[in-house]
Image 1 (cartoon, rainbow, N blue to C red):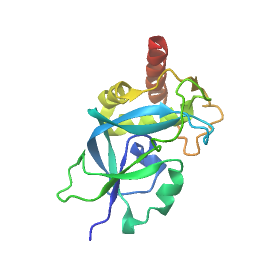
Image 2: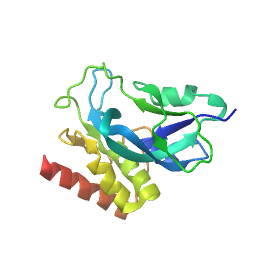
Image 3: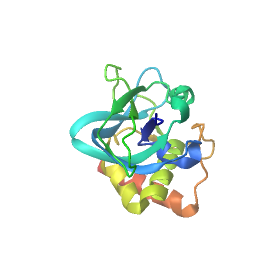
Image 4: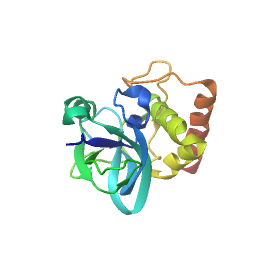
Length: 184
């Protein structure tokens, strides 16, 4: 029996934030990213929502022995959903799960403390490494909820898996943050 895989569309795209191997670029249809604030978390969460007209790029990686415990703990506040809508380069069809905030979870995109810049840095760094600058542009274009404030915590990162960015990576994130701020 083959091991299952997860589909990451946020920080899990950045392979520096986890130890899961056998990772591959992938694409899922029927899902779209959005930012959500829930009363159970101190910051807005990046989640995937079902959306027939949308698709997003991400990364799949193997979960050895189907041992989901560590990943479920990392993704607390999210439910795991099995999906067969992922295109990937594997020659076999593994079970693939995507994490999403429960649909019944109350949220208000206009309230809450905002998006941690240290988290956004990690996501953008991952997309840049996997998909290049075009992938970063696509990440911003296929994510909703940019009207939520972005909190600059770079000097004292609150995100537990924060990564150091190069000056060019920092400039890229800042350029996109300025763009979404100008649009909202």
